[in-house]
Length: 316
Image (tube, rainbow, N blue to C red; front, side, top):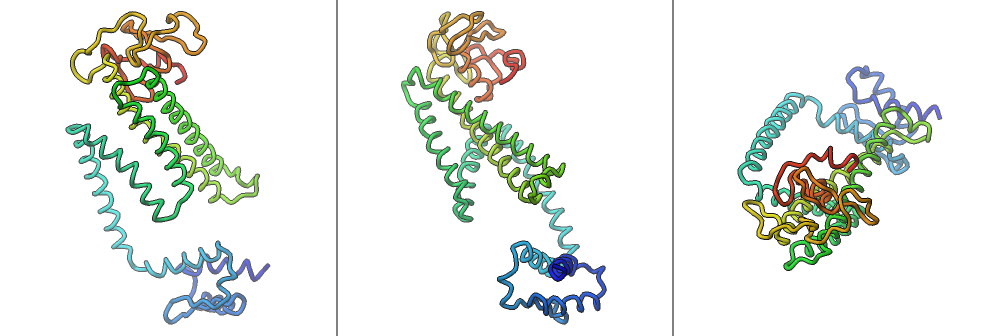
């Protein structure tokens, strides 16, 4: 046990300049006898014997960490230049993206959506991340079917409800995944992993994984839902991007899906309630929730008046 502790100790601090050379060389000689790991002090390189296979993953990681410090020794000025170039690139890229979005919104949304959808697929194929690939394929297949129904003409009466329910589910699931990931990361910072006899980096990996899935599918789902919301509402005829709608909205009809309202706004519905906006237009609960929350629309689907979501939904 003493030998194991000493080995881990010297593997951890061996690359630091604060350790005297003669002390470090003597310790490396002892390590060579005990573990079969030899260090050439003249060439400052590690030479591994066949017993390297017996080391644990953590010990191998420590050895790679020492090698990394040796390779980058004396490169401080180059690293500083790289950081400055990175910061400058980030600032310029941010300005370019903001101007692109302001001047050409549709091309910006389409390009970023395609990039966000396709680039992770290429990365997971290269690195063989099969779990992400399976979830990506499942999400893409279901979403493709939903988008296909949303853009077809003529649009079916049940399509808006189906589309909004699917993306509302993605919104809720992504919110839950992000919250779980955040809680796990905060628990790791507070040291709760010790109670379960787990290592901090294991909990952090799990927390980051949940947080990534929540953010990725949440953002991707909202962008696709915005496109579907525009297509469906324009196909129904009660909404246009510019100008007046092509159809007149009758009383008791939802301007999002074009179907009859089941109950009045003051009545309690069995399946869903009816909501009235400040402009006095009424909608199905799922339709207006999908339009405002999932589709990121902040205006009335019919008259384009500003909508106050905090007054409409206490808990979206």
